[in-house]
Each structure stands twice: as structure tokens, then as C-alpha cells.
Length: 172
Image 1 (cartoon, rainbow, N blue to C red):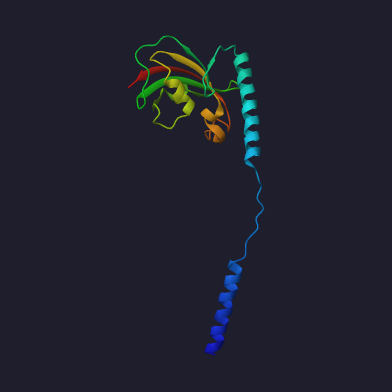
Image 2 (spheres, rainbow, N blue to C red):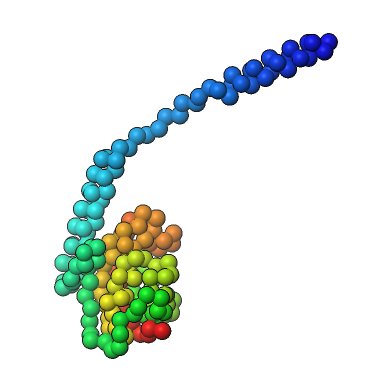
């Protein structure tokens, strides 16, 4: 009786080993690096056309940074430019490029963040460092410098360039 139990246990063990060593073939969609790069290039080209169309329709005379932000700074302002870690406060209107106002300081209050320290779009950090107190800026952030492929989970869709109008009111 003891030998029968040992034999059964042995067979269960062997069966277990056989089952665990089988590979499971799950189909995987292959996207090559080249294919991914080409898809992103096409997206960037389409987004650039959308941005240029917006600039033309709004008759904006904007400069362009090396990172792809189109911007205009108005007024001379006073004081120094904000340094890394300084708290900045500003009023704002943020639009989708279809001219839909999505966020505004009129509805939400003045916005504050620490320059290059808080979690804000990288394009916003780039532009805020170009302003002195009292200056206004109009700028378009391409999606990769705004909320990228995820959007903000609320009003900003995925891969959306954004148009901002801001006024820097305080640096601490």
C-alpha cells in the first residue's frame, strides 16, 4: 500500500514537471522601431500643420523655440526672471486648438508652482522662465511638451497641443 502511494506521488510529480515546462505561445503584434519612428514622425507632421493653421487663423506673430514652442511675450515687465525653485504665480487661459477654453484662472484662481520642481508641463516651465513680473505670454505647446500621449484625464485629450495666454504676477 505504501509503495502504491509512492508511485502515485511520483507520477503526480512527473506530471507537474511536464505541465510546467510547456511554453505558452501568445500572439504578439510586432511593431519595429522603424515603424514606430515613422508613425511618430507622421503624427508630429500632422500636429505641426494643425499648429500652423491655428497661428494663421488667429493672425499670431509668434517666435519658435528649439524645442518647438511657438510664443510671443508682451510688455517689458519688472525685476528678474524666475530662477529654478522659485514659486511663480500667474493668471491663465488654456485652449484646445479648436478654440475651446478648457481651463481659466477666472474659474480656478491664480495658478502657482515651483519652477522646474513641480509637476507641470515642461513647456510651461520653459516659457515661465522667459517672463518678468507683469509680462504676458501667448504660446502654443506641442503635445509632447504639454500633456503628451495621456492627456490630463479630464478636459485635455491625448496628444493635444495647447494654446496658453498667461500673465506672470508674482515670483517668490
